[in-house]
Length: 386
Image (cartoon, rainbow, N blue to C red; front, side):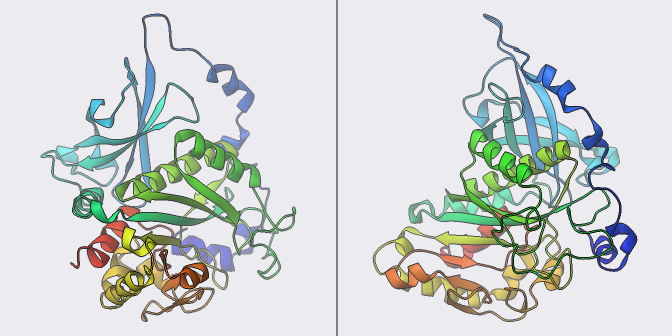
């Protein structure tokens, strides 16, 4: 949620009143009508047709766009798919007088909405001359990963988010005010503690169907705040998977009439939302890998503010609201590390410390970060010594 929306949640009682869901045009639609058409078979003998949904990051660096096209074959690899284009002037990625912007397919997923044989396609974006657009951080991420494949960098990303109703208030919050203080909501159970579990469960199943390695999900510290974990995955694929998981969540929320916000600090005095990145190399996971973990932490300490600038789309401005030193965060101005300490920049899990190997958790990335940029920074700092 933007800062002005945040202010409305905090100070405007009117925004905190009114019916939930009923104001959403999508929620008012009859889903039974759609179900009549969901199982239409496009396959006839000797005739293969399917729908490919191309998905990409727009000019904001944090929002997602998509468009569909019909294919008459089933692609076995992204390179078999046609390069497509879109109006970049409508997405903040091109000038109106030279608007055609290219979509290059990178990763294929099964489509959980239309189901097989239909597909979702994660793409990156290029200008008219095939130079990467300003928000195409995948190119640099891929280049970094290509230099360190032997180190087998693994990533697991903990994506936190908050659900809003059609009035941009946290979903399920009481009219005219806030719920009781945080405490019972994290991993909570009960109608007065968690909201929209149906949406969360649908997202979990849809991601697994699509082929995204979702490791788990849980309710978070603020009511209507949730988290899902993507990974572990190697290199660039972890970022592909996270972006597609975000797309599926937005797409599902349309049908529920709920808005998904990746704003890092939607409500003051409550926990914010991050995208904690768990990172390891083959050496870190090996016997006595704690030595390599500590080396990586030392490298990160020397470029702390450089990482902060790439850990949200506004070069640290969003994280300024979240990384205050309160609510399970470190201060944005200080680099700290510790074992099992969730108020540090970098946390070493207790089990990793006890076993002297494993991974580190970078708790600084904001919930609206571009995971391509985050992974690129970690690879270049911790492995490539750049």
